[in-house]
Image (cartoon, rainbow, N blue to C red):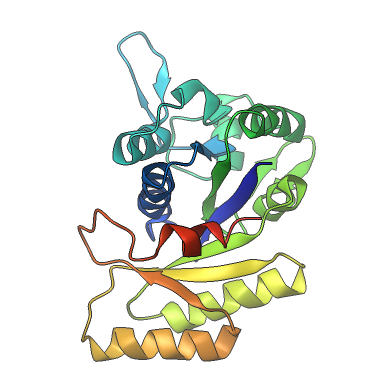
Length: 227
């Protein structure tokens, strides 16, 4: 039976895709059939033929070495580097939950561990067209627990605390936190970890230094986060 984990961030550009790549790589290297899925992807470049390249999916595929086709990884692609709801208002093709779940179901049928990645932070609007669709709606529809990616530096206590509080209030399971851009021995970074653990009651699953090519967590510990 397939197991899933949703990677969310405290905001944009905290390193969700980078961490997702390390996660999927760790799972693949453990011998598991691992896959990646993201409902909507903005800020993609166009090929010469006009087709959009799913940049985040391509990054994860290259980093992890998985054989999963790019076409399976994301049903909605946009060129503008804005939230999916605004990109679709400008470019067309608004996100529909039915299509997201259809693509997700196909991935579930083929792989053991599926790592899903969110867009932006927890309150990212995915569609604001005929109806509203927010990132938590997709997380709940997929039945996933979450792993929170945060920057290790200044301001993270507030962003981690607010995100964790929102998730708790909306019954979204938070399984662990990964701190990106972590500097061992940095007094502020070390204190941020301690304060975030105290504030949220959630364990720190791993700390990732800049340029890391491996996730500092065992495959068994990583798999235990999946449900």
